[in-house]
Structure formats: C-alpha cells, structure tokens
Length: 162
Image (cartoon, rainbow, N blue to C red):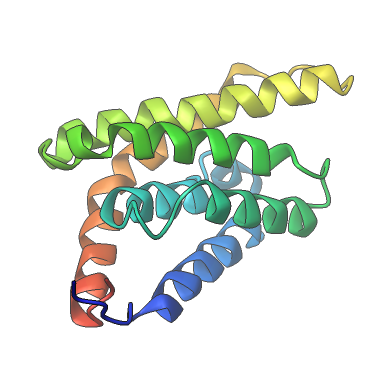
C-alpha cells in the first residue's frame, strides 16, 4: 500500500473561506436577491472531486460557520449543508461523468434542496414565508456552476490537491 500524505488541504480551507466571504459580502438589494449560494457550490465541488476527504463533517462545520456569520439559528445551515453533502457523496460518481450543463442541472436540484430545507426550518421557527424570489439563488448558482467547476478544478490540479 502507498501511504502518501494528502496535500493541498489549505486550498480546500481557503476556498471555503472565500465562499463564506462572498456569502456575507454586502450587495445592493436587487442583486442580493440573486446571490449564488457560494458555500454550497464549493461544498458540492469538493464532495464530487474528493469524496473521501470532504464530506458531511466538512459540511457541518462550514454550515455552523455560516450560521455564526449570518447570526441565524445555530445549526440551520449545518443541517442543510450536511444533507446536500450526503446526497452529493451518494451520487458523485454519476454526476462527475455528466457534461457541465447536466452537472449544472444537478447543482440546481441540490441548491433547491438546500433552499427548501432553509425555508422549512424558518417556517418551523415561526418566521413568515418569503416570496417565491427566494428560489432565484438556485438559478444563479446553476448558471455559475460551469465557471466554478472549471476554476476549482484548475486550482485542484495546479496545487495537486489529493
């Protein structure tokens, strides 16, 4: 057996930190409504690219960090991120062989799962339901997926993240 040290873990951490920074970046009202789900996109990529290394544990930690950064209900994002990571890990071999446009449709479904779980949690906690525009981030995330995938894959190959 070959026991190599896994390299490039700092790239994974930096990509999640960048996604969290983009998530809390203040934007004007009209564009904030279509803000992509950056952290979910990064999570989906790393779960597909390195399923043995990034999984539900990473998703839970990143979700908790996002809960703290947004000042929301603790565990809200952690739960939805963990579910998205689980589904991605379960289907990663199928999704990886899809062309980018089909991967983008899969990402749309995964981000919709995340957003609907967020809606459900907000409803349970007594918040009024938002307008249907809360689904717009799923569309912008789907459109951004090819660029995100190609950029993160280039980073992974450049720094030999294994």
